[in-house]
Image (cartoon, rainbow, N blue to C red; front, top):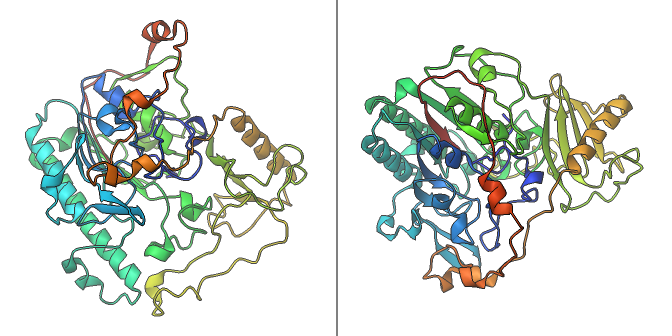
Length: 474
């Protein structure tokens, strides 16, 4: 599955949210746009209880950006993208450090007892399941911190991996073993408390591995943060007694934006008629093995990423400026332009006994001035055979599709650092700092509120049935 940074999707590509560049930094006054409906908000409309446990990382500078204001009945976890697994502290820069563990909208100081986050989050999930009525629908989003850096795990998980010489890889394996145990414990709780038979469990990741921090994407090319397959193709599975074709492998096109319409449809929910959807209902693709309704995926267009110095409109046949970082998939074809990011093939570090040395990487021999690549991803998922010069008409076709997408893009939201974000001004805690009375009042558009109230709803085409419990892990 191909998954971008956002883990709670609103069925829109990054270019339609303004979050197409990098990630939301702790000190930025930025968050997922407040006018974008989220998956838990739509599920609450049809009677679901909604709970989140784990990492948010969708912005928190205003109270309205917090998980409990974006559709979740409860939230237990961290607001930032990373932090210490035991102390739950995070330093964004020198003298810019703070505590990052929350219970709903307040710092959870009472949980500051040095417990490893993977195990702590699993305990909270078990508590939620034990206290909820299994006859009533529930949506539970579990965003485990593992296996993100820093590489930390309880000592007992290292023992079975002593044969791995590379210390980062060994730590990563230990973290993953603890995570695997957590998934087992959550699944057991679903069975113990009576949810399992009517549940859908979705396991996904938001990006590829980081080889310098224990991850590995071999034999795929590139790493986290790049547009190569090693950066954007991630593992995932759907487990449910409701699946018609169990134990099957899906090779159809599926993107994270597809979860929004798929799960709302499964829950017999409604989507506003004027909602812009980039995702598709892919339940029949997953459950029955049918063809995906999706024929393309816009991986991203980042107009402010470092430009490729040799890129030009001429190299893009006057259709596209190839200095811009972008990537798109259409059927079997994948096109990349600009600077796609780290481009090596990195063999598994567990096979190396030279520590963190990267001498064994397969280095890329760049062709001078190259800013366009074309691959048949079905035949060549490792991106070794560039076909851009052999099929210029296919390149033009995909560049036109890129251009069409770009016409619908909204401006990038990547504001500068706000010094008021410093946890030292907030009792040593990372949290909302933008106060209500500090915001400039903007004139309301005439009739905007009335128009929103009068939105017509469209019922998604799904046969009537019982509510389904949804459990998503990221």
